[in-house]
Structures are given as structure tokens and as C-alpha cells.
Image (cartoon, rainbow, N blue to C red; front, side):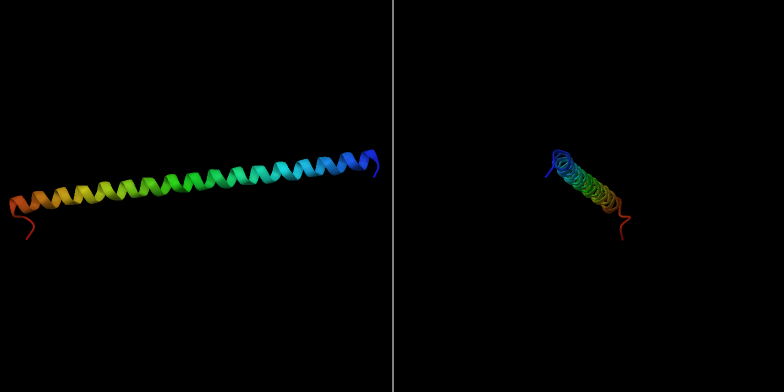
Length: 66
């Protein structure tokens, strides 16, 4: 292999490795974003459920939940 061919091969290898690392980082970022979204949705649902429970408790107290 000539020096220029070897240098070209190594450049291609480096490019491929960089692309693979970038892809892995993008996947990790996407997974982190999805996890955060799910956590927010779960927290929102818990808040909604607690508010509904409080509302039902007040209705029960005043007799409006019949």
C-alpha cells in the first residue's frame, strides 16, 4: 500500500469511528429526552390524581358527591 493510500484508509477509518460515536451520542441524548418526557408525564398524572382526590374529598364533605 502506498503512503497516500494508507493515509486515505486511516482517514476513512477515523471518519467512520467519529460518525459511530456521534450516532451513539445522539441515541443517548434521545433516550435521555424520552426518559425526561416520561418522568414529566408521570409527575403530571400524579398531580392530576391528587387534585382529583382532593376535589372528591371536598365534595364528600359538603355532600355534593352523591
